[in-house]
Amino acid sequence: MAEKNKESLAKKQRKTKPKLEDFIASSMDDEVKQVLFAFLDYCDSEKITYRWSATNRWNLYAKDKSLGYIGIGDNSWRILLNHREIVQYEDFIQKEGLSEAMYNNLHFCEGCDGNGSCVSAP
Image (cartoon, rainbow, N blue to C red; front, side, top):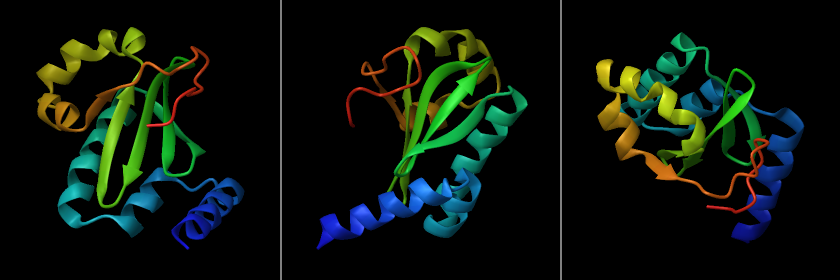
């Protein structure tokens, strides 16, 4: 039954390509929302964009390069980074006090194919 519901969610998201902000607003507790929206504010300030790519997953891009993605779970989120690209933002992350939020939700992904596609599921 859970697999059928998951398929339904995947089909729905493929059709609607939900905006991350809308998905967060409808699926997370206030405390989790606050931290994730702070991260999205940082992304906006640094011209890092995020686009829906798969069920509960939004790719992060800067200057047309894939940085990784944000994955949403049951009232949780994580950032899986393409660490070859993110190092250029390390100083800013520390200076802006975002290190704790980033590291608490950070998982390194080595499954990116270099073109913004994930070749391994988390």
